[in-house]
Amino acid sequence: MKKILLLTLMFTGMAFSNVYAQSPQSVVLTFYENLQREQAVDFKGFSSERGQNLFVSAFSDGKPDIPSCTTCHTPSPTGTGKTRAGKIIEPMALSINNARYTDTVKTEKWFRRNCKSVMGRECTPREKGDFLTFMMGQ
Amino acid sequence: MKTSQIIWDFPTRAFHWLLVLTVAGGLITGFLAPDSWLMIHVWFGTAVLALITFRLIWGLVGSYHSRFSSFIYSRRETRDHILGLLKRKPSKHLGHNPLGALMIFILIGTLLVITLSGFVVLGGEEKQGPLAGVVPYFIGKGVEDIHETLAGFLLFLIGGHLFGVVVESLLSKENLAKSMVTGRKAIPDIDSDNTDTVKGGVHRGVSVAGVVGLVVVLALFLIGIPTISGAVTESVIPTDVSNTQYSTECGDCHHAFHPSLLPKESWFKMMNELDNHFGEDASLDGKVVQSLEAFLINNSSEIWDTRAANLFRNVNPKKPLQITATKRWKHIHEDVPDTAFQHKLVGTKTNCAGCHSGTQVGMFADYTVQMPKGF
Image (cartoon, rainbow over all chains, first blue to last red; front, side):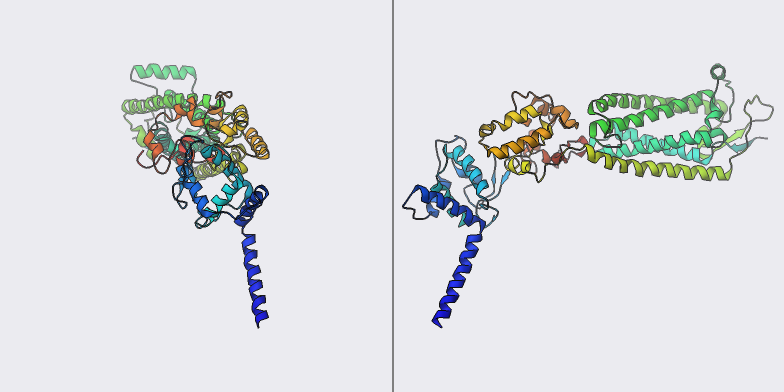
C-alpha cells in the first residue's frame, strides 16, 4: 500500500514537473538560471521581491524621459502600456497575457533594449530572472 | 394637315436620357462630392463610356435618323444653316440640324476622352481600374489635368446644347425636348421648303434589337470593367506586410510603415543605426537585421509605383527622418487638426491605419480615408 502511494506520488510529481518543464516560460527562466549559475556559485534562486523592486525603481543612468519600466508599462503589471510611438504594450503579467516570456530570443531582445534605455546598461542574468519570476507570479 | 412621325427610335431616346443621368452623376460626384465618393464617380464614368460605346455602334446600325450618315453635313450646309439662323429662318431638318449634329459629335468625342482619361488617372494614380497595370503614376497625374479641364469644357458644351435646343424649339415652334421623350416630330407640309426626305418609321424589330444591345453593352461594361480591374489591381499592389517578420519586429513599437514609403537608401541607413533609432534602442540580431533589410530594399519606394511610393521617393536619404516629420508628410496632412490625431481611435500621427485603409499594402488612397467621427 505504501509502495503504491509512493509510486503514485512519484508519477504525479513527474507529471507535474513534466508540465512545468514543458511550459515555454520555464524554458526561458531556466535559460537565465543556467547563466546565473555560471556566474555565481552561490545561486539561491530568483526573487520575486527583487524583481518587483527592479520593475518599480527609478534609475538615473538611462534615458532621462524613461527612468523606470513603469514609465511605459504603467505601474501595474496588469496595466496596458504605450510605446513612445503610440503602440499599445500588452500587459506584462503572465496571468492575463500568457503569450509573454515564451521565446528566449525575444525576451533577450527586449531586456537588452529596455535595460539599456532605462538603466543605461544591460541587466544581469539574476536581474532578468528576478524580473521574470515576479511577472510570472502576477 | 400636319402629322407626326417617330424620328428618334426608342434606343436612341433611352441612350439620351440615361446619358443625361449618368453624366449628371459623374459631374456632381466629380466636382462636388468628397473623395470618398470616387468609386461612385467611376461607376458613373463606366456607365457613360458604355452608353457612348453603344451610341457609336447604334450610329452605324440604328434607324435612319440615329445613323451618323444621316447627320453628317457639308461645310456649305452648315454655313447656310448658320446664315439662315441669323435671319431667323434656319434650314429645316427632321433629324439633327447641322449645328445640332456638330454638337452631338463634339459631345460624344469629349465624353469619350473624359471617360477614357478618367481610367488613365484611376490606373496611374490609384492603381485601380482596368489600366492599373499599364499606366505609370506620373502619366495618371498628368492626364488628371486633361480629365478635369475637359469636364469643365463639358459643362460649357451642355450649356450650348441646351441653348441650341431652346433656340431651335422657339424658331421651329416645336418642343424638341419633348421630341426626345416621345420620339415624334411634326412632318412639315409637303409644299414647305423642307429639304429632308421623310424616311419610313422605325421598325419594331430594330428598336427591340437596339434595347437588347444597350442592355448588353451596359452590363458588359458595368460588370466586366470592375472584374478586370480586380484582377489587374492584384498584380500592381505592393507586398502585404501583415504577418511578416517586418510587421512583428518593427510593428511591435510603431505602425509598420510600408517599405514603399521610403527609398532604399533611407532604409539602408536606418537599419544600420538601429541602436539609436530616433532616440530609441531598437537594436536587433545581425541576421534579423539582414533579412529585414533585404525585405525593405525589395519593397522600397523605387520598386513600387503607388501614389505613396511616388510622393516619398524623393525624401533626403542621407538624413532619414521619421516619416511623419518629413515636409512631404506634413504638407499632405496640413489640413488635419491635431485633435484628430489625438482621437482615441487614432492616438498618434504615426498610426496611419487610424484613418487610412490599405496601409499594409502601401495604399493610401484618398477615397478610403476615414476620419474619426466629428472630423
